[in-house]
Length: 360
Ligand code: PLP
Image: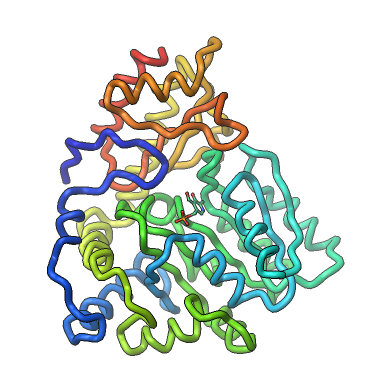
């Protein structure tokens, strides 16, 4: 795998290999044709392997936010608990409120992980039943990787019939995630982050429990109706016209992730990239997150010695490298390095050499 051209280090969309882009230029076929169905059947099997699930998986033409909404519409008849630790985990709350769902928030400071003990305590002191809890595996705004396995276990220990809805937008394909073993109910990821595809597609795993819940709901909307997605998946297709170029690209990319690189090696490469980033930037930058919870896909760094974070981003741009700015309130104080997807250790090292000159 070569990524000679990778100078693009924003935390999504991320750099896409030329061979994946080339896949998107293949001729069009009908999405109800035998040829498409054959591809889509194999694609859904590979998506299940990616999530490590034997339950249900779908590929939806939408960015990830669509499926955040879909998860809430299908799985929350009445009330949800939203755990937050940054801008993207907050998005669940915003969507729930817009849908008219009763939502409680368990808020954590930006840069801190979601605390399993606080989650357990919240359940023990709760006044309501929760149909679902939302968890954000990797909070891209701050660079925190939450302990999803433990958090999901807390929910199951405290409430047997509460569903676990997971945003894995910037962790799937970068950090270990085991849908069945961790007893998740809905887990979604758009393809422009750890999967290193252009934006426009979302993969989602759905449990039997979540489908049962959806079946009892009288209204599930149209575009993200899990029962429709399931019925059509059984016929090897999506309910609506998909982005066929993205499907070609995802099929090719999953071939690479699952059978060439392998999930274990991909997760290990991301750990190496996180460690390298934190080690190399430590001379001139402070990480915004404790080492124990530092994300494997994105690092937020605050320059030391009064250097301006936006200036660092600008100076890198002049040298041909695109980094991410700090998010929201962190915009002035930090910059973010996306080290995910198909970015190699070699290209990250080359970028960090230049960053040494700019920020050091
Ligand atoms: N959740 C997380 C953790 C994200 O990082 C993002 C985008 O950056 C989203 C949700 C929104 O995803 P999308 O832009 O694909 O709708």
